[in-house]
Amino acid sequence: MVQRATLTQVAQRAGVSIASASRALNGLVASPATVEKVRRAADDLGYVPDASARALKMGSTGQLTFAVDDIGNPVYVEMMTGVQEVVAAGGYRLQVTSTGATSGPHSVLDLIRNLRRGYADGLILSPLRVTPELLAELAATPVPVVVIGRLPQHAGVDTVMTDSALGVALAVEHLHAQGRRRIAFLNGPGDTTPGAARRRGFDEAVAAHPDVVASTHEAVDFTMSAGREAAHRLLDPTGRSTTAELAASPGTPDAVVAANDLLAIGALHAAHDLGLDVPGRLAVTGVDDTSLTEIVHPSLTSVSLASRRRGQLAAELLMRRLEDPARAPQVLSVPPLLQVRGSSTTTAGIR
Image (cartoon, rainbow, N blue to C red; front, side, top):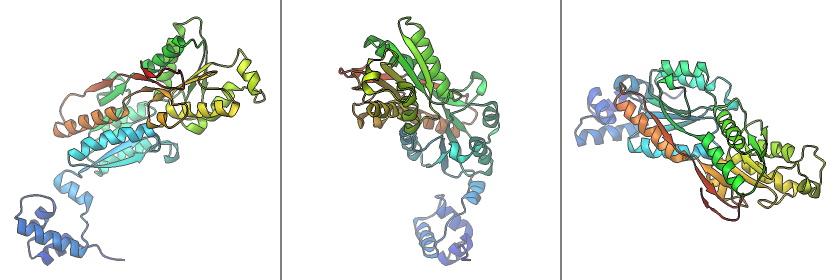
């Protein structure tokens, strides 16, 4: 096995003391000449600092972690972009990790517990489910944590949230104003935080309109393929109807509010599969307003939850917490905004 070069070897090669070599490599006070010699020696030897030892010595790893359910979901990519902008400006590296189903049911809890090993200075977490176990781990974690999502008031954790229930209500109001009266809600798992909030927003919005015939359907997860499969069941329950029969049937919804953009695009695909014109026969809206909204046809009406901005705010809260660990927890909120596009109307604009 190849032996790793040590700090002692670097110091010997550079002709300086171990303390001087350490200061030069860690950006502490050292003369330019010493820094040059030490860095050249380190490069020659292929020296790689031991991050855990450096953390113990300096009290910092220079690394922050961003954990999300699905790193392939564009909403999390936009959040990550916002987080990266802030933490990079603060001199930190960003590690991104997935806590989704393929990572195991306890991956979020394991991630927080592993913070005790000192591999990161702080964590930004966007959990799909908020459980008593998660709240207990957040309360016991030894490093700062910021949550993008909704937590109970007593959680005592820096939080960036949005009102996705209101966002869904905005979509329902828009569709009702367009004359849609048979409105279906295509949700992801209802036991998740976003699933529960968006279902509540839909139920409250349609309750205000007695002339609306509403229905709710759940996909197995918040993905495009799950949305397509669930939308097929929603639009063609028997699986045997012709396009003409579906178009003429009073039982076929004339609008679908999807709980996120991936589900909404799945619904667009299902409508195309079944020959239903969008938006003529069926209007479709999503939530998150990701970059995908402009690359489908017709372009997708969606509720913006300002994902990038939420990422920026979460990173700013984390940087403040790192500077002042004793400061009182903050809860910041970003309002939803409906972006109207071709999937729900021929007149596009902001509502």
